[in-house]
Figure 1 (cartoon, rainbow, N blue to C red):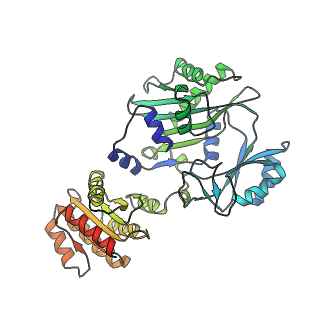
Figure 2: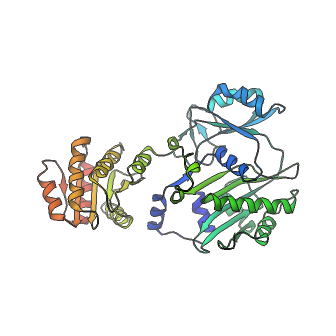
Figure 3: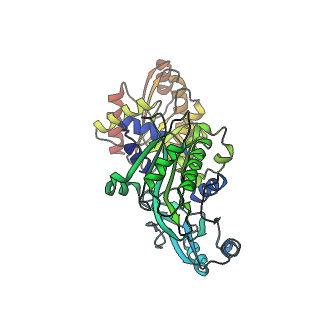
Length: 423
């Protein structure tokens, strides 16, 4: 939601196909405590804090990090926004609490190992494996700050608002004139003038202007050095001791940079991701979960969009997309079927492959082997076209498996919808 709105603010619009392709890209997302630690290493002001994974760690953590404080903030760590207004499935309200230090253990115990549901997690929620204990700051002002990659200006774009602490969606609706955008020349880097524009847009009340400019420059340098695709701080706060502090941290990173950001990518928390997406990534496949009843195996984003459109035209709804790409092996096709059939909502599977580099006989062999291994319990409709298509169709016909073949895309979609509704 946040990134979608930020793109609109940056003057960009995405087609339906563009949205699908954007979802298909995997971006590393790290927890707040990890982002705060990373910012601290780059000279950015952050609250003092520590992440814990068990109730037994609470007392020691408070003695070590907050020995003279009466209160502490307990933050559940999930890769989703809206934690403060979230609700745990055990009935406990709120994923962020300010409590007396002697109550921190009790609150942490109601969060750890529990499922937190927020506006961004969906009804299934996400498990809280760690909580972040951090100091309670004396805040005098809250602002919003983010850096994204902007296609329109071909470089990073800083988006800031003098009001913060609430969602950027709400800020954009209530205070559109307060939101400023400062594009940065990727070749020149951030200048003092660029940083000053940002600070003037934030309009800090007590923080030193020169120090604030330096903080903005450090945030930009962090964004570039770590190959970020998103850096969002909400709130970027002013404290009573006149400092500009990143009181929250949301960071995403470009997976294409994994080879040079190995330390960062070792932070990936796969327990927060869709297990099917994790399995697909391990098999070098792309998976996207949707809400329908027809599982779709395709090769290529364009074919995926055409498949979705034709299924919808015939009255069905895709349950997912699994893109095997242009050069999948038989083993990858088998893994693809395992992932598709792991979704209980799937009532039928539609395979739509156009063989270019991806040969139809390889797909056919993979389908047959998969059908034998995973003991398919739902109908499978197969449409093949392109390289080695006749050999592929022969393999399917002689397999002895109950596979429904289709002559063209329209035929395949019609048969898939019929199979899903009658199964």
